Length: 248
Length: 277
Ligand code: HEM
Ligand code: SF4
Ligand code: FES
Image (cartoon, protein in one colour):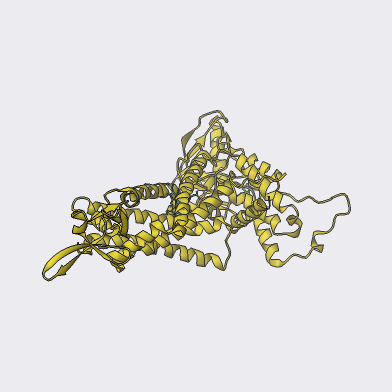
């Protein structure tokens, strides 16, 4: 495959940055998108140019590290996949492909396509946990009966890998899908109920502090989320927050 | 420490947006029911309805709630929109938003702003005249008696006052609608403000009637798009999302978004093109 890549290049956080064109040839349809970038980088290094910086780790769709806004969509045109699972067969020979970093005030660019998503970590720290005594007499989680429906929903929410595609794709750069998944995975379980009110208030507070936008319920996040996190989670968080706020 | 912020937080702003939005949907339904009398009823019943709407205390309360809702909804919506813009300082060079979200959902602020402009002009054209215009006409009818036409004011006690009785000075009009006996200086009867006549004249005006009708219809199309997304969205905001009820809410919302603006729009079309002056 012969392609024209239009890639965002930015030396560092202070640099203004710009889109740079890279023609590339010899790309196999069975390559993953990141492998295609590896090929480009090898060519750049051989020429003595600076390779394109991009995030990745597991390359099997579980770590949430890879990002990229590809041809106007987070993780590219395929559904239910991360960029590392996106294959070049989704594109046609001769295509022009825009490759940009995830854009949000709360995700500042570090270099080229690499963004700082530690705002997600700070939201997690604000309440995305349960407090259990781990001093040796820990109770086995399975001793607490949990109905199947809630267990399944909690598990579905816990499938969120914190990739940030929801923020990147949202017209408001809202982090509601991510935060609601993290709120829901605990809110649905008895172990999470104890701290439920504080959790939702604190996590939403931190989300607002980080400078994410508000939710307009466009549903774009749900469509682009590689893990199929449902908008039902956002409704659940809205309920949890309302109840917690009214309780004071 | 828990931090609740029922006025400031992003979610709280959205609750107010949803609650005021849904209240405005109720208002639309009520307003529509009244307006439809322009087609399905006569001038007297329409004017009686208009009188009721401007004087009944319960309606007064609802109308204040409506003004507040519109203001709050508009201000809150614009604030949210500015915050949302600020959350992405650098735009994408290429953004294929159509691949993942409906057009209306991405343009609520633009649609809302057009609706706001419409509401303001609409209120200047009708509401302000009804409330403040000193020369607002009172409803009259012509009755033929032995080949002679005579004009009468209709009064709220279902009576008639000959127009010439005011002209000759036996009666005078005070406070815009009240008939006073000039000699005895006592109020005898009260007339109806003829909102029907003003409305019909507005949309049948030889110069501006057509453009007014077209702009009205356009505004209703904009409202339809706003509601197409807004109605169901408000339920999601309030935390209602459930496999049983959500399809019903979404279906109802789309029906509401189509039917209500359509019925509103039919009224000026009917007046301009079909109603005989
Ligand atoms: C009769 C008039 C109106 C009705 C019935 C109405 C109804 C609604 C409803 C039900 C929503 C959904 C709320 C939610 O997502 O939770 C909404 C959203 C919105 N409305 Fe209106 N609206 C009206 C007028 C206006 C006006 C005058 C503005 C002025 C700017 C406006 C701006 C907005 C905006 C910006 C949103 C989206 C807020 C967001 O980001 O989620 N609307 N409207
Ligand atoms: S909700 Fe989906 S898109 Fe958002 S961070 Fe989690 S996995 Fe990524
Ligand atoms: S690199 Fe781990 S999800 Fe893509």
